[in-house]
Amino acid sequence: DSGVTQTPKHLITATGQRVTLRCSPRSGDLSVYWYQQSLDQGLQFLIQYYNGEERAKGNILERFSAQQFPDLHSELNLSSLELGDSALYFCASSPRLEGWANVLTFGAGSRLTVL
Amino acid sequence: DAKTTQPNSMESNEEEPVHLPCNHSTISGTDYIHWYRQLPSQGPEYVIHGLTSNVNNRMASLAIAEDRKSSTLILHRATLRDAAVYYCILAGFNKFYFGSGTKLNVKP
Image (cartoon, rainbow over all chains, first blue to last red):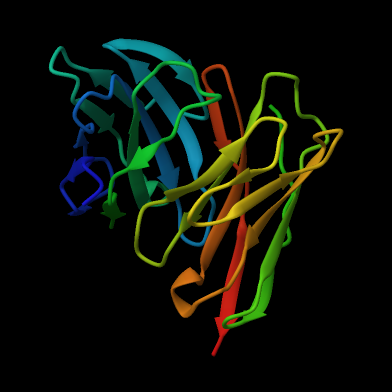
């Protein structure tokens, strides 16, 4: 157990639907990162939050949004789902804002299947 | 974005050392070099990181070229449990981008 909790572990839904993925960071960590990993692909950075504020954005689609709440948990909202959104979605947390010296702790991921 | 280049796959024999290379010619002065690995069906896990000097920890060693344009992750004695995808990452302010990684196969 890495200390980063992601729910749900598995999710199957239909095209056009909307889902929410949840992440609880490791205790004491203020920064949360979201990544998408499609089948046999590397990890694509989506977005980063630090202490409730958005701090960096990667290749996140406009149909996707995220937020970090006062208790530091984060949610990734995926809407108007398409088949190509099927992927593993990972959340990671770290203690600080700066990326360069941080050690990221990853959760086990949420596997999304869009039919 | 600063990019890393790694071989797609490598193979090693159990109990032998493994040297995993990474090229990062566009590295900036403040970028740290991180290595993570992803075992099958798991999230990535931290291996090691460094800035300029070589680094050692209980998992591995990181050798950084003097010009910082390349680095090598060294697993001193590969085990079957080390079979994974190894990612070399340049981490800068608010950026932590993974490359395509090297899939390491360890033969018994």
